[in-house]
Length: 233
Image (cartoon, rainbow, N blue to C red):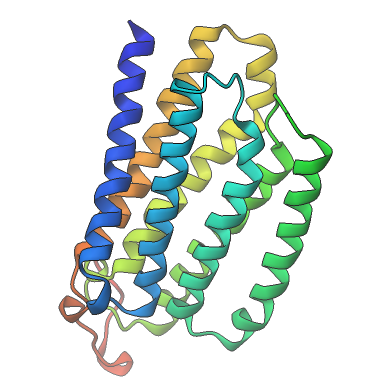
């Protein structure tokens, strides 16, 4: 019974990723460059979610953990390109290629050294989630420094950054304890955490994509920095 409910929840999560992709594709020409990368990210996540589900349900693959480093590389690259457009920072533009290059090399080295892994690549997961939190933190810092957005909930990238923060913190806690959970906890508890709790963080992230891609850039009200007050929700 638990497995069936969790399967429904996973299907709901995939459905949200599909909705985010469709919204982004339908409005692609009207979106700024930053949100176009979020659209590509939503499409990438959708394809990965469907691939993982196919491998589990149809191929009956016991472990799909070998895909995790490749998924992490794709997600981080698209997020980095999206935040490069949103931040418009020369320093960030210089650092980004090095971060992506070093992370890609590390993730691929881990993937090939542990081919057929049945344990989580905790190092890769920790780094990618910390980098995601860093991207969101940079955008929050930009908002605080500029003080130009009058209504934060009208800023698409503020919403994306909120979703990314929840996703990154939640997954970081799960991945840091993942190998212990796999070794010492019951199968039922593992299903609740990895299929239930983890997908709850995915739901928050995909919902932030949906809302951010739905908001029209023309609805973002910007006021001069000298006349603005602190951002308010």
